[in-house]
Length: 221
Image 1: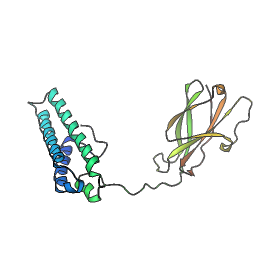
Image 2: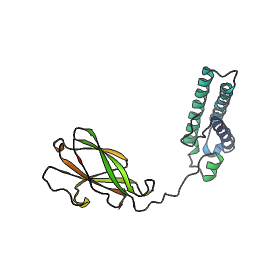
Image 3: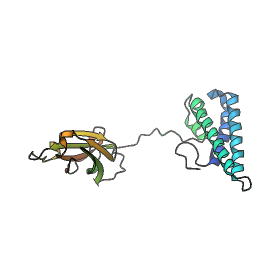
Image 4: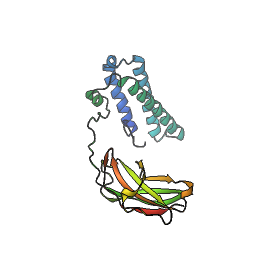
């Protein structure tokens, strides 16, 4: 079974153990969450069916493609019921920390991730997309890409026709857009084809900005 990406255990055995724990804990405190007895009974029945299907699917003499499919279906049904139970009952009233521990869930993280002023310096590499379109890829010149302060990127640019003044510094760039992607696309005006675009980037974290990256240029297709 693929590793779980949320609060569910990664293994089917772990899911069964969680379901059994829920029956015990919720059964003792059903009145707190107003869980009907029929709901807990259904959870127990689904867990038993999933456990039986798993045993059949793992047994060398009874393991068949049909048994494997039935096992998958049994766990999908059990998991759907567990998700519904968590959403419908366990979160009303909100769980306390002790409830999270008792139910085998990950406790709430109430501590915000600290993030300060960005210090990384980034630039862009450009690549062709289509007529009057350029792709831009964020490249780190200095700094750690995993720094929590790197919330997004403000890409500044200026389009110049042949013979026009080129930007002397990033402060001369007039247009910008913000993106959290490491790759993005700029769709220039149709008449910009054949002109030159100049770019410079700053890492942003809300109203805090990092240092300018170097100016780079590309011909607009």
